[in-house]
Length: 170
Image 1 (tube, one colour):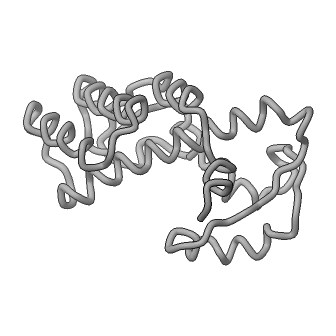
Image 2: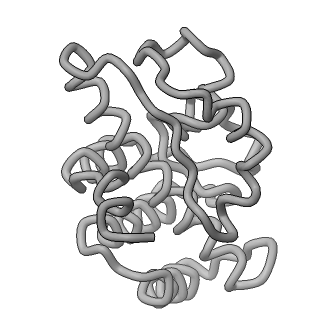
Image 3: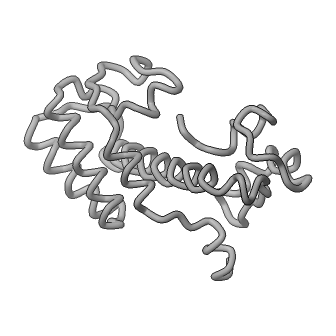
């Protein structure tokens, strides 16, 4: 991937920061306690049943997005939070921390990018689907064949299949 490709998918972190920061902390017992669009307004970690525990995870994710920290740096915060609350979770440390980190960081950046698209849709009323090369693109290629036909109007429900791809808002 060259610098032009990277720039085409860049998002000003202000929109991403605003999206994740403005979420409400919601303790849950299970990943099924919240559903679909509820994730767009609620910050939760499945199995985190204390508001303080959820708040600390939310703060750690906010810090990761604001500072651009790596998963490894987030895992240090994860370990501190788990120790502080004596939180027992399902799965391995690496899997659980990466699910929390990846899901929230990717969701915030997708929401920020969607916000940017909405701000300019009067001047640029079309989206062009472009998938990247590499391991993460292989998973989306089945969808990509159907979306690579060119430009699409920037209307949320004009092409329902796009809702699977863009934006990734839960």
